[in-house]
Image: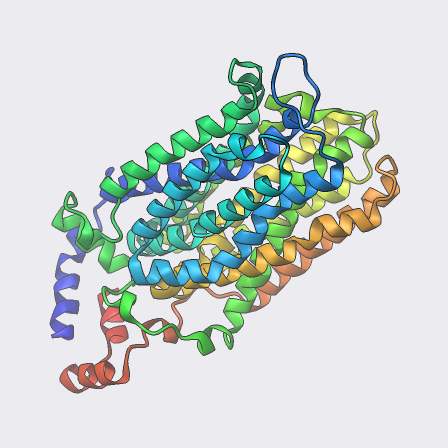
Length: 481
């Protein structure tokens, strides 16, 4: 039976390979893209709002006299819940599907976001911290759920483009919040408006996603048979994956998986350093108040989004035309995405207040070329194991974010005088070193081939399959390809 199915896929393969037009897979990717955009609305809104929340104004907005340590506590509390939620989120997405887990979690996160102004009334920073932890818990499902969905919907011939397009929503969401926050604060709503607007938009998206989203092609009522067969042939994610036992031992004895974790940790550490510390450096050392110009703050992330849409089709083209192997392409683009920002950080560390324009250019290049790493480590989970991509993402994203929590602590320990360029130079060289080591380990240990443990099934099922057909499900997949 398994052999016949593989032959059928072969016979329809030529017709299915012609799937180039806009299809249901692209509609699903578009829904996921906006899920990333609005998910980052819920994540970044506090970073934009905390300035007017703690700045004395004469327009009647509430003002809270929170000191620097309290504000840091509020800003970091999101990650307490976020890191804890990673592995459970991956398991939930695998068991119940990414659609339900992500959809209902976003509904809950949206309601909690709308409650932020009420929670802050009276200056209770403890309540805001608790709400941010809850936001972290609910948004911890974002990457594992999206990865679980992409493993079902993104054919390997389009994997870089679809996955990168979806995840570029993070940059779009960050940029929109940074670019529009000033207008919201100056409106009649004041700073509470950013919570009301971001919460309402995310809530509307979650309802649409629960109605029109689908866990896999076979769950969609709108997809054609031709497109469904095309996707199922080129994903390698089996229909039975939800009931498959997670091969934990195989994960933690897999050198390619450790290489992937190293690359993701390097990227996350560098990205958060660029996102959180560069504005302070430019304000203190370069005497450039980036925070006063919302559009300037958003510029690097708009550039990153644009480069995502340029770089990812190039990656797919190089792989599909067999100019580069998938493994080589993943390592090449991850190197571009981490070592070019590494060089930009080193260059920025020597900038002076007379070189502001050059510093902005380096920052924009550094953040922009981060996008190439999306065609490297970020899609590598699906390369290694389509059936367990979401679970693997939950582990690697949890480790990467946990390690990156130490980045601001290191900055605080080294930078005693924010106007001392020598102290900042040490911070940037440490970050550059982490970029260097993380990507180097990915080059050495990384792979982009499906691992044997991707197709592990229960022993009784495996025995029956082999006894009936003389080959495993993995063999059928290989034949179909």
